[in-house]
Image (cartoon, rainbow, N blue to C red; front, side):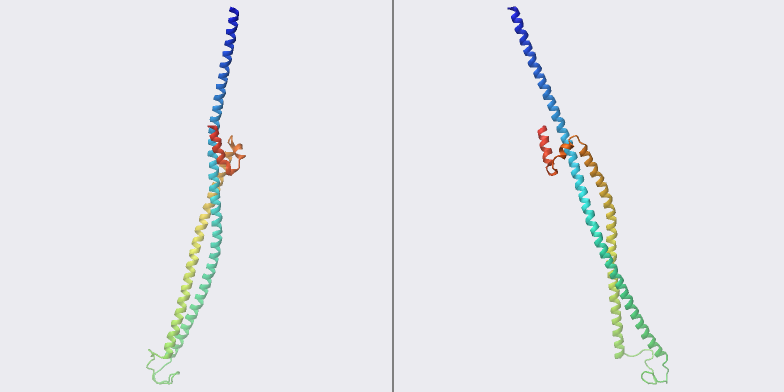
Length: 239
C-alpha cells in the first residue's frame, strides 16, 4: 500500500511538473509574440515615416519640375516678345531719323533761301521778287498768306517729329521692360535648376532609405495609392 501511494504521488508530481512546463513555454511564447509585435509596430512606424519622406520628396520634385517647365516656356515667350519689341524699336528709330532729317533739311532750305534773298537786298535796287526799290521788311517781314502757310508747315513738321520721338520712346521703354523681365527670369531659372538638382538628390536618398528598410519589400508589393491605408492596418494589427 505504501508503494502504491508513492507511485501515485510521483505520477501526480510528474503531471504537475508537466503542466508548469507547458505554462512556462506558453508564457515564453506569448512574450516572444508580444516582443515581435512590438518590434514590428516600431518597424512599421519607421517604414511609414520613410514612406512619408518619399512622398514629400516626390511632391517637391514634381512641383519644382512643373515650375521650371512653365518658366522655361515663359522665357521663350518673353524672348519672342523681346525680339519683336526690338524690331519695333529699330523701325521707330529709323522712322524718327527719317522725319528728323526731312525737317532739318526743310528748315535749312528755307533758312538758306530767305537769308540769301535778304542778304542781296539793297536800297535803291529792285527786289527780285516784287521789283520794289524800297525794302522796309528786309529785317522783319510782315505777316502774309505765304508766311501763314510756312508757319503751318513748320507746325506740321514739329508734330510729325514729336510723334515720331514719342513712338520711339514708347518702343524703347517696352523693349527695356521686356529685357528686364527676361533677365530676371534667367536668374530665377538658374536658381530653379539648382533647386531641382538638390531636390532630386533628396528624392533619390529618400527612395534609397525606403528600399533599404527591413519591411521595404512588403511595402513595395502594395500599390502606391493603397500604401497609407495598408500601413495603418498593419500598425493596428501589430498593437
